[in-house]
Image (cartoon, rainbow, N blue to C red; front, side):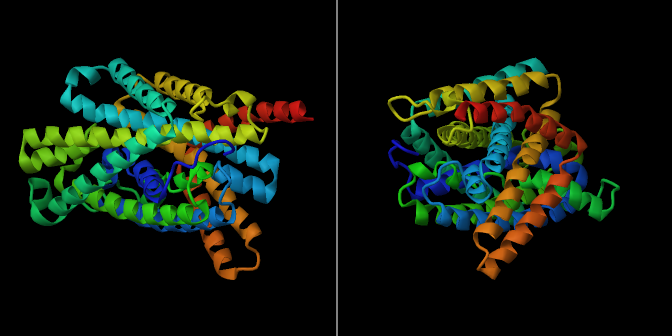
Length: 429
């Protein structure tokens, strides 16, 4: 990232990974998984292994291209050229501005448990989500250093709170739901079908493992910092996420959980009463804010890197005096707002699930191509080749699991990007 100060160190980069991974996927996902009961553990297991494989891919690619901002885009371009690089950049950009509404929606759900009037109707919920995502946009317009400080603080808060909650929910407390657990697989589907469906949903909780590679040009000692932050952040997020979601599943009755816009607050309310439930809603809202802040940061940094290579319109490559891609952030936030408005009539849980599957589908194609990029760039190292093959197989499996609707939306948005690519090629020539 030419001209940008290297203001991100190891702990901020790790906080970016952990903060982006532990976000709305953790705080609202138990409601989306409730129809599958404890059988959703199959999806968690598959996604955890897949996330570690993908983290290993990005850690190695980060060593091979330490100064290349743009994350998946930079790696795909290095291995396969501008055409594939553009496809990856476009898909990954879509996945980011699709993720931002999902996180804002989760934050709105917890805000609504404190101020019910804010989410009394779908229109109010949508308006609240849009206001929240624009607040984070203005945090990032203030500059990378401000955004990084917000990210580090909120990540420390969320990890500490979730570790305490997971230990309490799994080891120390009993509730009627824990005493009389639901059937292992209440969905009625086969275990293979459950694993297929839940692996796509649970992967959402682990998206963001590549976050440290996106602003690599702004990372100090990127060759060492980016791989360490990627592996350390992924491991922390996997452990905390699975433990905390398992605690919610153990504590809250399945019927209540399936319709709850604030499952963690509901779990703590059952443990410690209404006052504690409201306190957790505040903590969840603040920590979702941290995840949203991290994703909005990437919303500006990815197109900045691509535009500087001439594959995105030049407007995305413009920065202000602080090195902030102001216009890129504003464009991305506008698209995220339109996505919320397009589905504002749905319930919070339904809207969240739809946005999750769209974002996951859009991100899995870049993940698949990056795994193949590692195979090409590391032909002489068989061990890394095995990691690349397994990561590619996992990405293809999870992509199929996102479902027909998300795949159709993803394909349509991908095709919409082709005219931009052809226009940019013509402009460059």
